[in-house]
Length: 336
Image 1 (cartoon, helix red, strand yellow):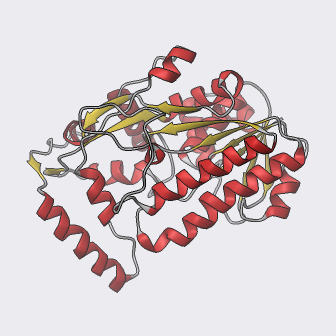
Image 2 (tube, one colour; image 1 turned 30 degrees about the vertical axis):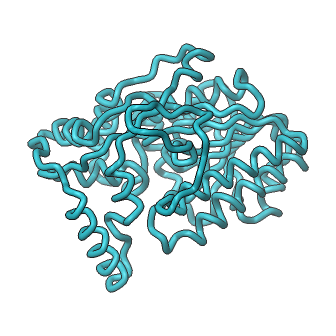
């Protein structure tokens, strides 16, 4: 029996859909979590969503609650650990340490106690080391924390260390490092936030480059890597490396908006994150941009998915295919 943590996130919902097509699956959720997003995503992809949803066995547990998590792992043989706090706001560092690091430690300890055979951990390209512009980053690019390394990146790197501890203590595990994940999901969360903002149109774009991957590809690769991935191995999941200008253009164009034409200058972004910091402190709201996101938007980087392609032969979807899927979902769920 397989268990999924973070089952209502973008990766979690797509993973549930992938696994439910193969059989029954256990999913954990926190008290008060809105699980309707799972049904919406299932109905987006399937006309037989009801029968697939019936294969999900929900168990209430928070990964920061060791007792509840241990109980939820009863009878589990494989764990897909997708739960995490994703934030680049410094005030969320405590939550990321508690959930991303402490929660992963609990998952590892619970798996060891329950006799789980294997864990598939969702990390991030944020935990991949830096490389010079023009040099593709790989799973072996050396990690080194720097002055502007985000708290999120640090937490995901430390979470990987917990997985390696688990391997040393007897549980097998593989790690995936996806880039920006594009896929249907809950409003105001993860990459959906960016898509929703660009849905209104914009004249501006950041000058850097990044990589994107379709959530469907992440789920498919995770299921295959659970079986075929090497114990202790990491796998970068990338559909396409591209400039932010092209990414923003694809999203705005998909919504019928004019493409952005003005590159944001570093000084503009510097003023922007400082203004947002003040505004968020005064209003109690989340900042639209932070120092960490600004630093990231200025970088030119690319990532290699050669390793996972060589093992699985999986044909990753393009950024355009991933964006069109999200747009189709949003336009079909106007009540969100």
